[in-house]
Length: 422
Ligand code: HAM
Image (spheres, rainbow, N blue to C red):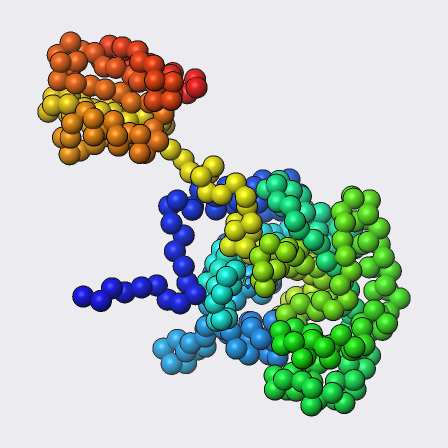
């Protein structure tokens, strides 16, 4: 019979890989908690309208990449393509701002975008997502970026580059948009079909285009830095000053507009040369109008998301270091020994000793082989003779040493002591 495979672009994360995932999540929790963030869990499914209004109708994500469907034929729902919109929806829906407008939140989980799958790009991928709501002070921008870089440092990642830009605000961006429109209008013939459309819907989106000929046009296009207002300029200068104070090196990339419409002022990405075309490990920015646009109060915010698949593929240590192996294997010979072992095995597990045994009545040699294969640190051998003599042999699999233990009421405690002492 034909087997059923997973959906294209959706992948399994196997037991041999999950250790590193948990490790990364653990470091995220630890680092973000140090900076005063708390986690929030939001649904994977939202009303389509939420993403249209926040990410923007003219973005690639909303135009082409969302998994949307009609629920029972009337309501359009979407598998979330990102987490920011959901976090903001929750912040507004639960009036979290009423008790304190400042909320520092993070969430980790799967996102869905119907992009063309390739190395580092999946249709289901995972993000570690952070949002700092309530303040528009550039110190917050610096703090959020510092926290991101500290997280990456704790993971001992190198070959990373921080790129920053300012996208201006509602006061200065329209001037830039007009200039860009005028410039692009004269270059229509050199642009792809998508970009021709973008000139009318949102000319800034032309900067996102991955097509080489469009890049060449964009290279000569006006830059936002010429249009930015005094307030935005000052905000950006202060951010740069704080980053310098923390010795965080960065590069200004004035072509970076990010692929989502909600950004204002600071935007940033962490990129690497190690991942080929999909070079962004993390991206984020400020979104001072988003909470209001989604029906909440006029409260500013800034955040970022890290792509977990990309991050993990960069970790040189690999999975091996993070796999948890059993502490003990019980090799039992004969029925009597097996039933004593079954009890002992589960009693030890209940006391926190990672214990394994064999249920197939195999020879001592093959049980020892299995203990080796499972990479157990110790093996407890209970043979048919030993059980009669109420004895067991505890073997250190690494040092190849062995001690005899009495199979009495104290054996569990003795094993725990040995296993925990190493
Ligand atoms: P984003 O730049 O769309 O931003 O995504 C952030 C990160 O998610 C990317 O840098 C990348 O590492 C990863 N990523 C995105 N798409 C894929 C994919 N198809 N396959 C694998 N990894 C992917 C956002 O999503 C914003 N919500 C970030 C944010 C939070 N801005 C403010 N707060």
